[in-house]
Image (tube, rainbow, N blue to C red):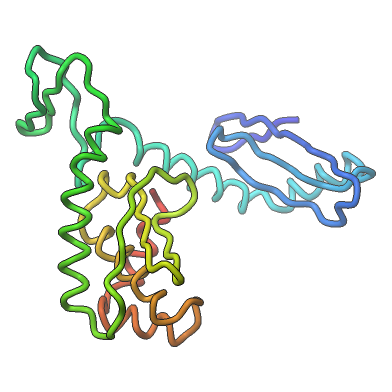
Length: 212
């Protein structure tokens, strides 16, 4: 099965599972349309569901393609650079280019830079935070589905290494978001009120990050 949208063709992958009562449609990073449904769901019903949700599926494809464009190449603090490999032993930025060693390890470089920057921004936001909270410990790792995680018992905030690619305003938002979990562990209205106290424009940044 295939799906045509904007003069392009996308594969449809159907996965039937015993016990599934509902049918779910998702567009994944591979730009394939994944349909999860019940074991006995007829193909004609799946085709009809895809047809009636044509615009929604097209919107999901647009989102995934936008995310792919926003993650291609070398990004650093919200700017995209062209990588140029050279004999230098250090990383240098010149205009829209970044000159790197032949054996450049991007993730290792990001992590080295993140240890300094993330701690600096954590301290900055902690000092001006409007509520009294314990000073959090900082951890950094690469994550695929979250920008940050807060362990409310150990007071550890883990930040996604991918934030090194984005503008500092998004890093600050994630830090404030996770620190607020040390006030309220949920995402209730009172939680968002405290986030807004510390970053009035948080909703704008939260929505923009969906494109990453």
